[in-house]
Structures are given as structure tokens and as C-alpha cells.
Length: 627
Image (cartoon, rainbow, N blue to C red; front, side, top):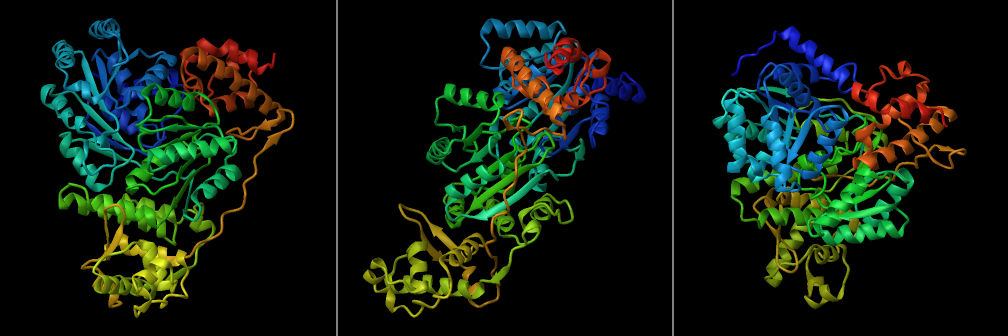
């Protein structure tokens, strides 16, 4: 490890000074101070911190401190071009020299940045993991290293290195070259999502076994978790958005490209500003839609999981899953994009039998090893356990990441405790019917046909195959289709029923079926509960629209806040940056509340660093005066 040129106390003073003067914050949050001090002094670190917890500052402040100490530039590995652009733009707004090297640059532009880097004029350089194995780029790093001007490696979204993670990217495996080729250069790996298995894989793959681990609480107390059974998911989603998030920014995740496009159009038809995003769209369309989502207010992005990693938009008020994700890591990462500003937000999900069937089938039919399939089945089971839970969602979610907690009082189960029923008898009848169908016909059938037999519905298909003669025909007539779907969902998830592919999915018994048939394994399920009461938006008649500020403001304060947001939108458009890069909503609200009349009045407002004070103070004072 390289020697630290500064005493510990001096390093901490320097980092505190950067926090105040550059970023405009008076104090670190949570474990930020310990992380910043450790990394600034040259220590390796693995940082697990929830989305919105302030991960970027954990490497940006050490990068600035080490550059000021003459140690050179920091390389930040970032997986997305859009994220690089916005983070570099935000650093420029704060007065920090930063740049990126990616495919959007011309050869001349890239050359100029390389020369600036070699001259020591850049503090943070952002690049994609694919570039790290590029010979030209490695030669650039070699030159910096030989001159003693390579200071720190920051590996963002580090879970991408793990095959057990929800967003595995093979190029992340090549990042071991940083440790092997440039010994002694400290590294910090950061992620918002990693269970124990993924965490161990990150440490091994990046050769960070000796790094100090900083694991923050995974709790996002401002997010309300709600999970509902699918009945009519389109209507359910529309009702959720219209009742609780009218005119607000949100993300809706769907499983397929077609569902994305259909859902986006449905929302538009309902008067909601919505845009589609999936990998099948033209690159320019995707980029335009993402830019609009980041830069405009009140847009709902309807997307596959191709959208989202590194989305820093702080005022996303909800994330909705119309289809069940693959695992809790993906669910947590995606829901974590809501409420990054710390204000109230919603994570809403609808799930159904077909979701479980599809996810289980994709695992079983994948070409992966049996070991990998077993891990993925376990992750799916954990997610279904969260969905079917009758106790606190947050306790279940945090427990998955090894964190103990108390009931939150803010999830759907805490607010509207569901009733529980014993589905063991229904499960045995379903399994018995699957067995008898196969014994009688020699073929397997799907879920709908199975439930028709158990409920005693003599459909054309049931009659055609003489399944009315089965001893189990009508034995479950006292169960609703919704109940039986819930039971079958559990049976598939626990491996007691196998889903076979082909044009139509069919169901078969497994070795695990026997224990359920014998009554040795109980099947307990939640009953559906009614939707929560509508939330009310605050309207200000003088503004003529919904006004939602991060803090309580009087009518004059709301007018100032609205004027500041309009001014910020103009500046952001001029700079080609998202509005929150200029100032966060919380900063605008604090300005509106204080109603500053002089430069001194703006001093000390959180989020206003020295560069922003110099650049925007006169405009802010003019806007606040409502001139």
C-alpha cells in the first residue's frame, strides 16, 4: 500500500473542508466520514450503501483530497454513458475538474482529455469497464502510474462483477488488471445491492479480500412497500398512479418489450405523461426518452430492466413492478430508485401465478449449471416469500440482507394486516389431480385446465378428455380460482410442481410433491386485502396546480419555490443537465423558506457550495424577490 503523505487529522480536516466548500454540506451522513477518511489515506474499501445514501461522495471527496495532496487523478469505473455525463456535469457545477472517455467523443476530443489528464488538470476521469482492457487506455494509465500521478480507483456498481448478482457484466471481471498492473493504488468498490453470496464474489473477483468493508443499513424508511395479487394489473396500476401519484415522476417495470410499449400507450391514453424504454428501441429514441425523464418533471418511464442502473433522479416518487422481478436484489435495486431525496415514496408490485411460472421455467430451461440454477431458484423462492408474507415487508426485505429490524408500521402489511388461510388441503387436491390427469391421459396440462377440474367446471376441453370422470373432479369447488392460483404459485415456487415449456406451459409432479401430498409440509397463504385509502395532494389556488415541496411552506414560500423551480429548469436546459444537478428540490425549498435578501443570507444553505454561490447567487436573489 502506498504511504499516506498526510497525518490523519489533516486528512479529515481536508475532507471536511471539501464537503463544505465544494458540495455545500455541513456534515457527513452515516458512515460517509469513516469511508472518506479511510480511502483518502490510501485504504482499500468495499462500500455497501443503499441507493440515495451518498455513495458518490465516498470516492469524490477522497479523489479531490488526494489530488490536492499531489497524488494525481482518480479513475472511476462507471457502467453507463448517461451516468458518466450527468456525474461529470454535476462535478463541473461544483467546480471540480472531471471528464469522461467514452464512445460519444470524437478522436480529437478524446485526445484532448488524455492530454489534460497527463498534465494533471483532471481530478476524476470516468470510463466504462470495457475500456479498461483497451491497450491504448492501459498505456495512458501506465504513463500516469510511472509519474506517480495515479491516485485512486473507484469501481461503481460493483455487483456487476458477480455471476450471483442481478446485473452481471463479464467486462467487470477484467478489472482485476487494476490491482495486478498498478500495485499500491487504493481501490474502493461500491454497490447498493449485494447479499452474502454476491458480496463474497465481489471480494474474490476484484481481489479485495483485505479491503475494509463498510456495510450501511439497507433500510430505506421513506419507501412504502406494497405488493398486491394480480387481478387486472393494468387497472390496478392506473388506479395506483391516479390516486396516489398524479403528475409525479415514476418508473413502471414490465417483463417484456411488448408489455412496455402497450403499458406506455395505456398510460398516455389515460392522460399520464409516459415514455417507453427497452433494448429493442432505436438508441437515439432510448437516449431521448431517458433525457426527458431526467430533465422534465412528472414523466413516468415504462421500461424493462434495461433501464435504471445509475439513475440519479432524486424526485422519483414511485417505482411500480407490473411483473415480478427475478430476485430480491433486482427488486431492491429497482425500488431504490424511488425517493432518493429522502421524501416519501412508494414501491408497488403486482404479482401472479404466471409470473412464477415464467420465472421458474426460465431458470429450469436455462443452459446454466445445476449449481447456478439452485441458487437462482433459492432467490426466486425468497422473492415469492416476500410477496406472500403476512408480516412486515421491511423486516423480510432487510432480513434477506442479514439485517435485523422491527416492524416498520409503513408497509401494506403493517397498515392493513392480511388474514391467513391454510391452503394445504387445496394443495393436495391440485397435486392429486395432476397425478391422475397424467395417469389417465399420459400427457400434462396447464394451470387453467387443472383448476377447472378441481373446481368442477365441465368445460369443452375437460369434457373432451373425459376429465369429469376423475375422482378429484369438483373436490375443490369451495375454493375460488384466486385461491387456487395462490396455492399453485406456492407449489411451483417451492418445487413441488414443475413447469414444462413448449408452446404451452404444462405442469408435472416432482420429488418434492410427495411431502405435500402426505400433509408433511403445510401451505399457508395470505388473503387479499383492500387497497389503502386515497392520498390527497396539496393544492395552492394561487398557483393553480399541485405543489409539493420537501418541507412545509406558507403560500408565499410556495410561490418562491415554484419560481425557483422554473428558473432552475431554464438553467438546466441551457447547461444540458438534469435540473437536480443545478440544485436539489430540498435546496430550493430551503431557499424559499429563508427568503434571502443578500449574499450572506444564502450562506450555509445545504447544497450550495462556493462555486454555485458564485455562479447563481444573484439570479437566486432576483427570483426569490419574485421580480
